[in-house]
Length: 395
Image 1 (cartoon, one colour):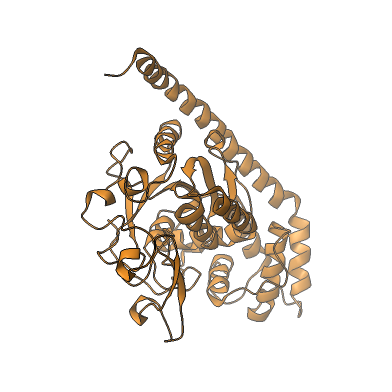
Image 2 (cartoon, rainbow, N blue to C red):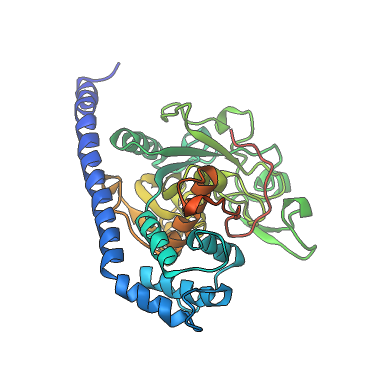
């Protein structure tokens, strides 16, 4: 039976959680309002600058930007929207195709100044926007009370539940290690000592492209074996029918720390596709362990173009030493480490989510052609980085 103190605490949470949600909702409303105001101000105050850029790149002065002129103009536009965008950054063909579809509104392979202006009025407010997703990483029994218990993991469960109560995310995805027996990450599979490393050669079907290619694999205890109790989500964790469940580590020959890709970065889990299909622009990552699967998931989220945050107090590391190393990688990838009381973070603009905003608008036009780009249907553009599409099921 719960103590009087525990009952009182639960009652206070019940009373004050709706209040906090209301406060957060108001803050989020003004964040969105200020973001829109900032976007409107940028495009209205800088129309002369945009016009000047257009004329500068219209080399023959015919009033149109042709195919070759567009390549240089769009880099200047991206740098105008995000001064940190490197001028030497080479746009991939898929990215360039998206940007042409967004700006060339009548699809005649020529861009007028008016087309550029109209596209910017849609593009700029979308930068840093998109829906917000919570990605909960591996809050499973084996990582909390089982064979690979992470210290303070149960606190991560409690804090994650509270975060879901305090703020309503547009999308929630729960990843889970879902290993077959005799998985390559198990020390028992190789007769190896626990927590040592071993160089493995993944099979070609698992991503190995040559016989010489090897990857370093940590030797873990058997954990999260498909169908066993240790692989189930912890009983205290809030789980809703609307949550996406993403299985990872299902290939016997290659491990998967990240919720997006396997460790060879050759196979996808389906998480990137599901988030982008739902127009997610901002990702908050929680769970276990901060220095392995949570950190790897956050790094890949950023690499896929999402504005990404790792919520530290809703996560737990295996060790402080490896967590310090992971934090350095996160900083270099522009992933912010925050606390749960900071959620949601103010919208921010980066060069990557500038491109992602363009992709979202083009995808939206494909689904509802009358909404964007004068009604034409854009091309289907695959997301970067390049990976082999997986046939693994997203539940």
